[in-house]
Every structure is written in C-alpha cells, then in structure tokens.
Length: 75
Image (tube, rainbow, N blue to C red; front, side, top):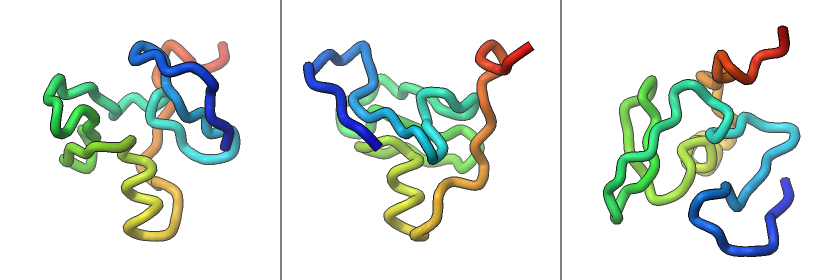
C-alpha cells in the first residue's frame, strides 16, 4: 500500500496494489454524507474510511466481495 502526497478530494489517497481497492470495485459508492462518505452496496454499510479498510480491520482479511468495475476489466 502506498499513500499519495497531495490532498485532493477528487483523487483516492490510498492506492492498494495487492489488496481489493474500493475505488476499483463495482459495489463502492460515495454517499455524499459528511459523517459517512463511503459505502459498500453489496455489504450494505457506510463508513468514514474506505469499506475495504473497514473489512480488513474488523475481520483481519481482505474483502472477499470485491469485483472489478466492468469498464476497468481488460478486454
């Protein structure tokens, strides 16, 4: 995992190279709620941090429901 240098709300701060990345997942959503800005549609929850990080901290294993967005799949 690496962290980008500058703070820009339009770009993800965390890039996960070897684990599921919510920014590339078809189930990820932006909730537009200040207190819980991120959500996972398949697991049905909202959180302050990326859902894949919530799952990792709660279960100790990477998210098993990750699915790459259709437009990001190689052809």
